[in-house]
Image (tube, rainbow over the protein chains, first blue to last red):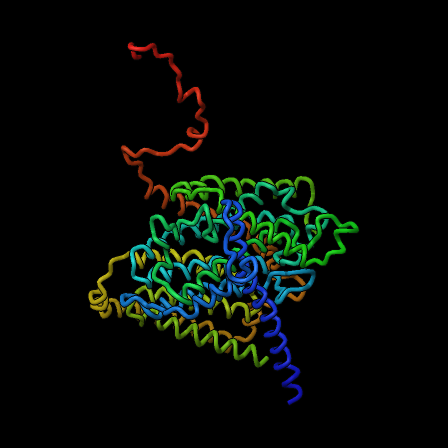
Length: 338
Length: 202
């Protein structure tokens, strides 16, 4: 019995505790990201934003969550019930499980697998299923159009994202997330690979269906796109998934280009601050840019969106892969991590 | 090891059950969703084998890209479900024949492992203790099989160009946007200021 405890039960308890240690702060972060977004947009539009529930509106996310919980869940009579219910759960679960490979600080990661980048890329490419299933199962024109737009958009931008990731991997020589961060000691990849950083960031905007690429839920033409038929907690799951994906993509960008948990300079006042604080600061800065973009730019037309993805980003990232590989071979800058 | 065995039986049971549901489901969209579940469980089996690179590539390529296009096509098609089931008996012999041929081939493979145990040594893919999956694959693909690998790439490129050529058509009377032309437009190109004398016009 003791061996059974040592071999299975105790590791199981530890893993569950670690999962909770990731998911609970993540959900709180998602809740406050909604408030952050509303506050920042309000400031940019010279409004006040939510300021009634709690001091400075700090309890607003919980009020919203409570409202989602007590509302009635409506399932349209023409909907395909099973798929209709699975779709938001899938979106939410995929947004959560991707965090298993994100290193928050040196060695602080749930699962340090050696194909971490591929895992993250695979999970983010699965995100399209939640949306396409929701759009189809709703049996509604608006929802279906939104789902079609979203899947075409996500598949298109994944191609150039893949090439950007390859560029980074060429400089690292490993698919492990921790090694990618450690390879950026001294010089973050955002500096030598600046064009790729920009391409990747814009692609993450498209990948998370955010402004200015939020055509899947363009409210002026599609009401709310793929989640137009959803109500109550199913809708809340979509929202949680969408915002968790935003944080995830910012974390991914931070790890690939902004040196993860590394301080900007490895000197006295900077390296007193623990790694995960730096990681958080970088994520918050990127999230601020997400919100800033939303408050500033108008929505792209669909053909312009496709043009950027296929005619600008794809050739540019492909060219950069060739250039990086050529430079590595020509100057003998072979990566040391393996 | 118990956990691995439980995981193996779970993945394989779900894979087989969902593969059966692919052909048994009445709704074609459900079939595609079950197909995706099958792919996913196959990826799980790859992970159990220690082939995590292949598992991730399976998910990225098949689940993330190919199955999305399948789903697209199946959703957009206007299918008459009753007519579809009429054809079932008609296609059953061909499908069954393909299935039986595949099963016999698999039996042959398994049979060799029993009748000739030394063949098993060459067939197994040992997990290298030192190199990671990705390095091991790269070292084989880019050295011993580099020409075959490039040949496969060219084959795919030709297929892609063929598909583009077949579907490319330039329609008449479509006004296309030229972004460089628009952004390259200057004030002098668009605006002209004229002094208009009263009562004369231009």
